[in-house]
View (cartoon, rainbow, N blue to C red):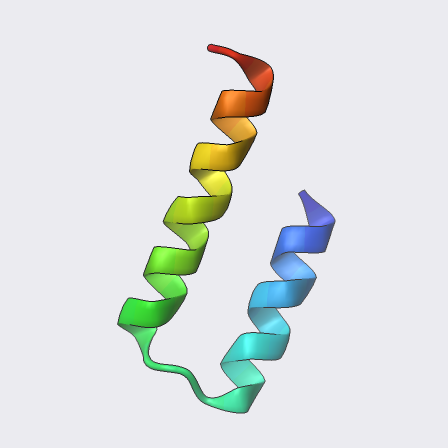
Length: 38
């Protein structure tokens, strides 16, 4: 998922806390799993 990775890199450069990044990653992963309907 290169788009998600690029977005996360941009957010890291802005300087968000790791906990916020973890929540973003978890949210994106949940969307991907829901889309794949696993």
